[in-house]
Length: 513
Image (cartoon, rainbow, N blue to C red; front, side):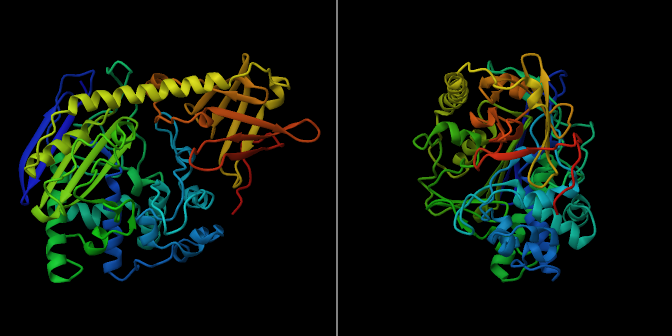
């Protein structure tokens, strides 16, 4: 069994820590309070706090425009490029789409050099109206990361360690390499519920995405961190000040303030979701996608008006949930070292919260967990069926060698190489050894790779993408019947991306800056 670790803070004091399973399924050692887990998007609150430090020192302002600190962001000519501020990116209200395929797809391989992260953000599509709709994306936090590094002259990890972690003596929290000492290793889950070991997520201080999801920490460190954070927030609310003696956390009224609405009960702050009970505090969990709106294991109906701040983190091999209640100085942290069929960190956190709030304790978690598992497997079955129904058997109109070549994105900093392989093609992304896709004929100039959850998560070490378009590659030809373009719906929330063939045969191309 993979591991699950729990920590609970009530009235500012630790009242419980508990641990289950094994840090590594190939060994018998259980986790403890100091076991280091990848916390993925729980990192975002640290990023907002780091920006708060710089604002309190007068080095930035909440309304500082991104383009005024990062000149390369001026390449973006839409309203996001012209007007987006720190508040906009930290509250995920730029409208930029997920764009995960441009930074990571398989086996923890990061797909961009660090110096290409900000330029690539200029090419990420905005699919929702600026400042009007919430849309979660790590690209916003990549920009915040770059700003911190530009203003301080230090890496993101160095600055966070110096200004936030060291003052709290958090020795088990890092943005860099976690090492191997007392680490909860990463696992994927087969369809039958058994686990397999996979590479530890490779997001780090070296990638440019550190502020979005590169954090690693322990139950002990996170409880210390959240205790200080909640205490400082209480002080700053009462005093009207932006700093608290003895605490590294600054500007918390702005961090905890809602900046973009999600629905009537929920909004996004800076690195935090806010839910006013009754409401669905599992909105950020994978459980939410597979439960449906009618199945809410905890709503807080007996505690109307209570504010819960929360977040979930997911990467291949890790899942994390945290819940903060400033009114009672309460924090709940649940960590696991897998990307499971159902999210136990979410369900466990909700169950603990129901007990702390004297709500009627849900008794249907086992049934709901089973429902989530079944619905995720059913979603893959539907995807497989959808792909197979669209397959025509019409052969490619050109010999496979005609499709061969290196295709580049609009900026020229992201390439897809196509090589004939057997009766199909091999697609290699960014010349990486593991980010590769075996393509089969699908419909004329369209090729695909069959969807298979176990292979995609347990063998290829990826994240589930339940999109038929993501699994298909469409080639186009010019008026001379020469294949010159590749179209890939690699970002399902946006328009398909177009990659043009590089006719000099090189793996490199001048980047358009």
